[in-house]
Amino acid sequence: MKEAKTFFMRTYGCQMNENDTEVMVGMLEKRGLKRTDDESGADLLLFNTCSIRDLAERKVMGKLGKLGKLRQNRPIIGITGCMANAKKETLFKKVPHIDFVLGTNNIHELNSVLDEVLLTGKQQARVDMRFEHELDYLQASRPDKVKAYVSIIRGCSKYCTYCVVPYTRGPEVSRTPESILEECQALADQGYKEITLLGQNVNSYGKDKPEWNTLFHDLLYKVDSIKGIERVRFMTSHPVDITLNLMQAIRDLKSLCEFVHFPIQAGSDRILHKMHRLYTKQQYLEKVQMLRELVPGVQLGTDIIVGFPTETDAEFQETYDVLEQLEYSVAFLFAYSPRKGTPAMRWMDDIPEAVKDERLQRLIALQNEIYKKQRQDMLGQVVEVLVEGVVDSETNSLKGRTRCWKNVVFQGPETLVGTLQNVRIHSFNHQTMAGDLVPKSTLQILS
Ligand code: 5AD
Ligand code: SF4
Image 1 (cartoon, rainbow, N blue to C red):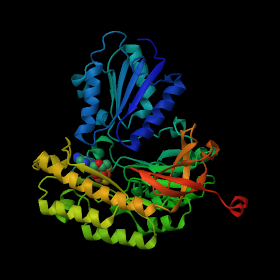
Image 2: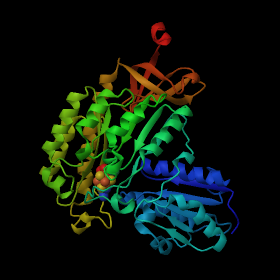
Image 3: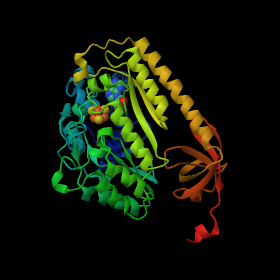
Image 4: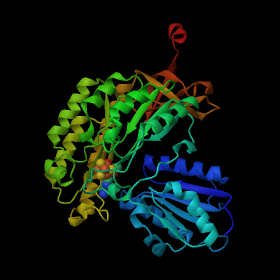
């Protein structure tokens, strides 16, 4: 096979995958390949895949199936991401026209696998179940110039019974604080203003390496001290690992945004236990209350699964009531999808799809009402927006986000991109708030 000159890469799934894509793009660019949006003309096609729910896998399989129909000038095709780990070499049987399978823990081998394929023309698979090699994150090629993802811990050791992540990404492996801080400093030097610390469960950071003496909140204090980084976010968290120390860090650190993804998953104690979530509803509510008291104005996000095996109507109602009570500002709502290899597979997926869907629709309708009320409450308020980019240069329209993730559009010059601005909200359209710039007072500009 001849060396590839161009590559096309598509990412499915979560922000961890997006960040892995950035690293792989950087590796290929360093090798001299050029990224292209032209899928049909590229020499190498890469699909960074997701296994979290059946639908995510079906999307990729549908896509790969279609590529099998290509006869002439067939590109090299590689599968990376969680599906690579979940299906390994069996992918070659299902989709015989793919050339390599590279798991989430083998990203560092991308170029050597590509060499093997080019040299031998034979299918290659590298799928380790544990992340053991330090990745050179500094080579990540990022599309955005204002905000960046920084991976701090890979894998998950919580083993929720429905979740495939501990089996695809492996157990938790923290990245050294030195390496994280070096990357954050490099991003600050390049002019980045916002960093999102990433991991399947960021707040168990450092627990696998007690000798480092650096837990998640310790790391936050270090990242906050980097000059030039205006905002620090993190995702995602497990409620059990949200500690008082972390809450105090959110209260005290200037750059740390007052938003916590606090996924409850279900409102019934029996279901929470069956999910192996390690907390009861009461314990969860107490933690939320503690956080809300300590950090006034803090906003919360959640993930919820409906239709978990054996979930009764009354148990679903408990989930509904919690969603109503807590008024999350972000809620990701899912119907249970059985995943091969997870403990929940031992129970029958006994809730009919129609019932799951009805429950899901009820939650979606409730959450939409909550969103509407929250947006209405924002009308007339002045919010701080980090300007992320231009929507339309002809109309001078800019976009950015508040500290708690709300999208805001407003008019202003392009030179404001990358700065913090105050915007008075006057209206909204779906999820996006619209407002007017509030000029900074002379005093503020001078200070
Ligand atoms: N079915 C449905 N939703 C799931 N999630 C994880 N596994 C499953 C599954 N098997 C959801 C959880 C998790 C989010 C990332 O995806 O809510 O927090
Ligand atoms: Fe999956 Fe639970 Fe780990 Fe989240 S905490 S990645 S839901 S096992």
